Image 1 (cartoon, rainbow, N blue to C red):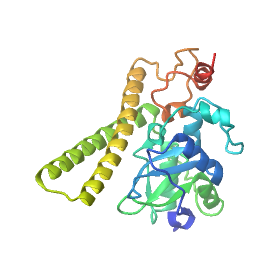
Image 2: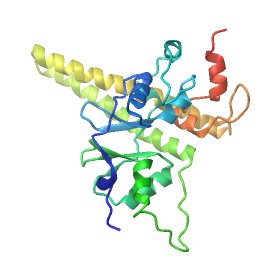
Image 3: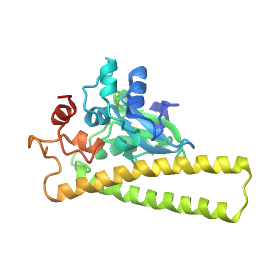
Length: 265
């Protein structure tokens, strides 16, 4: 089969930055009728993905892509940044990769989209489930007799992988900050250079803060997993859906109990 990702991907996708609000992400999804947003840095490198299911699982109000939030509902949305609920280190694909490879990655990881990136990790497009279904109609899926069913990535394994990635990224941010500090100490900078450096430092600091929050949430989730309590709601003892835990690893309440707790008394 000769089909490649570039044949079916959506080019120039709508994207968002990690320090934008979750409400801004919801507005983009609602305005454009989409369920996934690649999260990119100022250089357009992909650093995460946020989905409508992530927002619905994380925010303590009912959400719909077809019905905008009321003014009261918007005020009830917590001050949550995209970087707190997005998936870091998302699975990506190259534009010239075989379509079968893209489908296999989405199946293995149980994800609804793949950011398509160039060799430098910059956003090139996005391949969604809808794009794949279009391809599947005529070209994609052939099941070979006797071929084993591929295993999927468990929630705990996915969180372990993300924790490892975030720890490395935070170490990179720290080295970057140290380099900036040393450069400013050793070299005189004019006003323009000072301003540019300050902006770079602000962006790095903001992203590092969001990543650190996510890392702490993941570590708490993994500690709960070791006690067999990862998906158990602390209030009702019911099950916390996997989608909510993928979006908000630190969640200890199911969405119903979270909404009850946020409701004014």
